[in-house]
Length: 211
Length: 329
Image 1 (cartoon, each protein chain N blue to C red):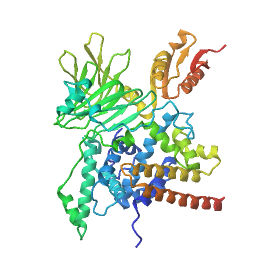
Image 2 (cartoon, each protein chain N blue to C red):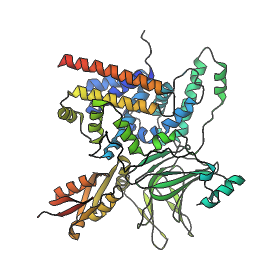
Image 3 (cartoon, helix red, strand yellow):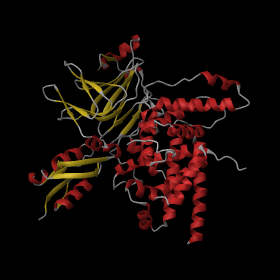
Image 4 (cartoon, chains in turn brown, red):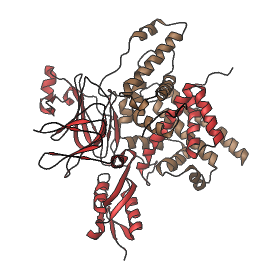
C-alpha cells in the first residue's frame, strides 16, 4: 500500500489514510508528549498536530522518508519556529527555541504506551466508551463491517442520522487520541464532549423537523 | 471576517467528511471536499488524520461478532497494567547479544550498563504496535514477546517467541539487530517479518529492503526483498523467493484477519489455535485434508467453522469448549 501524489491533486485517498494509520499515528502520542513539555510560543498542540499532518501529506515522496518519527518532530519544531519568526512580539523564552531541537532518543517514551498497549484492547475500550447510538452505529460499521446503508435499515434510522452518528464517533476517537501524552487535556476533552452533545442535539432536532 | 476555526472545530468538520466519504460522495460533494481541503492546510491535515483514525478502526473487526461493549474487556484478555518503568533490577545487560539477566543487578550497580531493555508482549488473541523513538515500529502478533534494548551504538531486539513485523527506520550509526534463537538478522531501512513458533522452523521474510541473516556458527547470508530464509533442522538456512501476494496474505493479522490460499483444514485449524483457546477438531481425518481459501476473522474460529461447514456440506457443532466438524448425518 502506497501513498503517492496523484498529479496536481491534493492527497486525500484512503490508501494515504491507511498509510498514515500505520506509519504516523503510532508516533502521535510521543510527539504530543514532547510538545506539551516545551514552550510553544502561544500555539496550540492540536494546531501543530494538524499542520504536521498537512506538511507530511504534502511531501512528494512521503513513503520514502526513512525515519517518519524524527521527521514529524522536525516538522513540528519548524512550525513553532516559523510561528515565532512571524510573531511581532517575541517572548524571551521563545528565543531559545530557535536553536534548540532536543529530539528525545530513548527506545520508547511513556506516551508510546498509549498506542503500544494491546491494540485491540485499546480500540475495544475506546469504542465501548462512545455514547449511546453513536456507539451502536460505530460497532455495526467498524466491528461488524456493515455498510452505513444497512446499518440505517437495521437500526431503523435515516441514512443521514447514521452518517452523523458515525462522524461523531470518529470525532470522539480523534479527541481521545488528542488526550494522549497530556494530563491537562481533560479540559479539552470535556469541551469536545460538550460540543458533540450540542451538535448531536441540534441534528436530532433537525431530523425531527424533517420527519 | 469570521473568526478562524479552532482545531477542535476543524476536527469535527473533518470527521463529517470522513463519514460522508465512507458512504460514498456525490460528484458535487467530492468537489466541495476538495475545495474545503485546499482552503486551509489545517483542513487537509485534520481530514487526513481523521481518515487515518477511521482506517485504524478497521482493526476493530478483530473484536469479533460477539463483541459486547458492556462487558468489554473480556476476562481472558491482557490485564491493563502499564509496563513498569525500567528500574535497575529490571534492566538486563545485553552482552554479546545474550540477555544476561542474572548479572544485571551487579553490572548495573557497577555502572557497566550500556542499555536497558524493555519487554513488550501480547497474550493469545492480542495484537500490538510498538513505536520506537528511532522511528521504527514493531507490530506484535498473537502470543508474542520481544525485548528491546537501545543504546547510542546499537538497536537490539530479542524475539523471545511469536511473530512480529519489523519496520526499521534508517540509522547508519546504529545497526538494527533482531535475535531469534540462534539466528541474527541485521537490517537498516527495511521491513520484514520474523516467525518463531513452537514445532515450526523459524523464518524471516523480507517485505522491503534487505538484511543479513546469520545462523549460529555460519557465515552471514544476504536476504533480498521478497525472499524468505527458513532455518532447517540441521541449522542451515534455506532461502527462497516468496510472491508479493503471499507476503501480503501473511500480514493481514495486522487487521485482525487470517488469509488462506489452498491450505488444508488441519493447517487452518492450527492457525486459528494461535489466536484463541477454542480448538477446531475433525470427526474424520479425511475432513481435515480438504483445502480452504478465503479471508477470515482471526478471533472467530466459530465463524470460520460455520463458513467451512456451509461450503463443504458439513456440520459444525460445539463440543465442550471446542468446535467439531463432522459429516452431515
